[in-house]
Image (cartoon, rainbow, N blue to C red):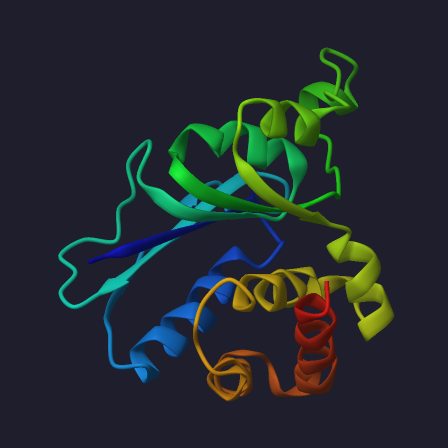
Length: 189
C-alpha cells in the first residue's frame, strides 16, 4: 500500500527541504519512495507544493485530488487551496501562520480569518499549531518547516532517530542545532 504526503506553502518556507527529510526517512525504513520537484512559483511568496509517495513500489510522486493521506501546510491559505487533495480519513497539519498573498497586500482581496474552522467544519481531521512561534523559540523563524516535520513525525510510525539522522543529512550544517531543537518542539505539540 502506498502513502502520499503533500507539503504546501509559499516560496521560502522550506517545502523542498521538508520533502527531502521525509524522503530520507522512508528510504532508511526500506520503502521505495518518489519525491516530486517543486511545483509552483518557488520565488519567495509564490505558492509551492511538493509530493512524497512511499510504499513497496512507487511509480510516480504525483498526488491527485482526494489522494493525500497527509497534507502539511506551512501557511493557512495554502491549506485552503489544497484541501481538496486530502483523501477521506486523511489528515492536515496546519501552521497557523498567515502570509498574505499580493491581492491581499494590495487591498484587492481579504484574507479569510477562519480557514482552520472551515476546514474542520467539512470533517477533515487536522492538527493546527503556531510553528512560527516554536521556530523562533528554537532560534530561527526559518525552521518553521522542521517544526512541522516534528509534528508530522508523531503521525508516522518511524523511529525518532531516523528523523534526526535525516535532518543531519539534509539541513544546512550551520543551522543543525536550531533545526534539531525545532524538530523536538514540533514533536511536543
